[in-house]
Structure formats: C-alpha cells, structure tokens
Image (cartoon, rainbow, N blue to C red; front, side, top):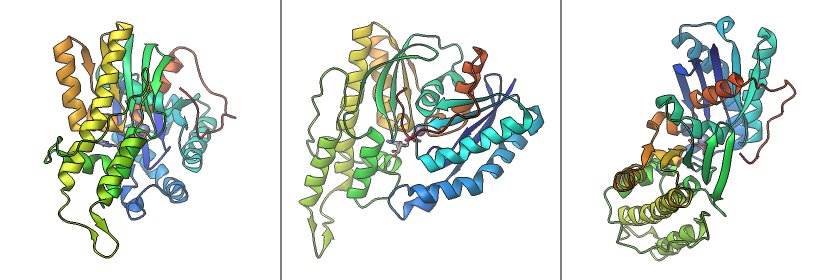
Length: 334
Ligand code: KG4
Ligand code: ZN
C-alpha cells in the first residue's frame, strides 16, 4: 500500500510517500524566508504560497520515491488544526487526487501526526505511552492508550511553548521562527543569570504568558526610545534563563505524568522537541528513572508530511477513511 501524505496547515508545504509504514520520500518546502520580514506567519501569504508550491512538492515526493500518482492507494492530509486558508489548499488537492484516481482519502489531525511521528523511527514502540506534544500551536500532555485513544492530561492555559519562543525572539530583536535561534543563543548563555518565574499551574497544565511578560519586563529595563536595545543586555543570558524556565516546566510535568499514570514510556513530539536542552534533559531524566524515551529525529519533529501519511495509513488499516465532503477546521481537540 502506497500512501501520499500532504501537509499545509501553517508555513511548510509538505508531501511524502510511504510504502506501508516505511518512508520512501519526505519533501518539505519551507516558507520561512517569505514570512521572516513580517516577524511571523501572514495567513494570506501562506495560502498563496501553498497554492504555488503544493503540486511541485507532490511531484518531487512522487519522483524521489520512484512512483507515479497511479501507484498511490491512499491520500492522507492534515485537515485540522491550522490556518484555514492554508489547510484548504492541502485538503482540496487531496480530495481532487482521491476523486480523480478513485482512491480513499483520509483527514488527519495535525497533533496526532506529530505524536505518531515517533512510530516512523520506532515501529515497535507499542502502547501505552505518555506524549508531550510541544509545538508552535500546541503544548499538551497525553496518555496515549492506543491508536486514536488519547487522554489529555493537561495543556497550556495560554501560549504554546513554541509561540513563547517566537515571541521572546522578537523581544530580543531576533528573527522568526524564534525556537532554533533562541536555542542556539541559549547554549552560550548562563541559565542562572536572570531568575525568571516558574509557573505553578495545577495538575498537568502549563502557562507561559507570565514568563513571556517577565522576559519583556527584563528587556524593557535595557530599552530606551531613542537608543533602542542597550548592548549591555546579554541576550545569550536572557535566552538561556528563559529556556531553563520553559524546560523546567516541560520536564517536571512530563515526569509527574509518568509517576501518576505508572506509564514509563515517553514520546516527545512537535517542533519544540527539536530543542537541544529539552532533548538533553529528557534523556538525563529517562536515564535516571529507567524510562523508555522516544525522541524523533529533528526532521520528523518539525512539520512534515511523513507523519501525516503514517497517521492516515494506520487509521486506514483499521478500515477508516473520510468522506469527500470533509472540510478543514481551524481548531479541534485531539
Ligand atoms: O511543529 P511545528 O513545526 O509547527 C507547529 O505545528 O506549530 O513547530 C514550530 C515551532 C515554532 O514555534 C518554533 O519556534 C519551534 O517549534 N521550534 C523550536 C525549536 N525548533 C523549532 N523551539 C525551541 N527550540 C528549538 N530548537
Ligand atoms: Zn506542527
């Protein structure tokens, strides 16, 4: 069975081909350069760019998998959550291909795609496990009991962790997307230089808006109207101190989810799972507590279509598919 996966929920136009659960190709065309000058994703520009790039990206995915459209047996596409105009481009293309070729079509929840990305590298991972989903749009902990059986233990009450990274990058006068930039800078800074507050949310919930405000207040101390940001402020230390506060929350809550549920297997998913400190701290904790840890390769953490194809394929194997009148949805719980 060959599955074509399509992902256009935000600012990556992506297509992938899987043979059963094995990735034959995984093509991502990033729009980052287009959105950079606006400091974030401009929805209308994103939709137009998807429209321009999607067919070339699909063609490239097919050719690097050495297959043609007529070999494809299933089309899987992200239909929620995301920017509505951007989702519409991918969903419309997927429906058109499925209808023209008379093959099944399946809509995938983007968050589920991120979680299942771990199964690409570790097909024998097995259930249950705890999944920490951390991206630009999500920050949540799930007790994953099986395919499609996700019990949310907690989530952010305000910003997603990736969103906080993007905002802090902006405050520091750095570019979009902020995650990789702040991560790199933080590696050269002192995480104890500035004491940013740790949020005390109940249970497994997170909150990053107070931390973001604390970073803004700190930066304001070094900013003047006429001279801009004082070079005396050490951006590396601010980045490292911010990063330490984010990771304290993510690691601490994940470990208490392990303790509370007794499930000693952890998957970290989403764009922020590419973070160097998060990877290191999770590895350290997992080593200390004998937890099985699954960290997808960086390319499978950030947005891609291989994870969407896999999620669609796994559901299809259980006899599921979507109707052609499925519409994209800007938001929907997993
Ligand atoms: O999963 P993703 O590609 O898209 C969404 O579904 O949101 O995640 C993108 C987010 C962005 O906010 C980006 O700044 C963040 O992931 N990110 C990182 C790192 N790499 C990407 N955050 C922290 N450290 C990183 N190394
Ligand atoms: Zn994503």
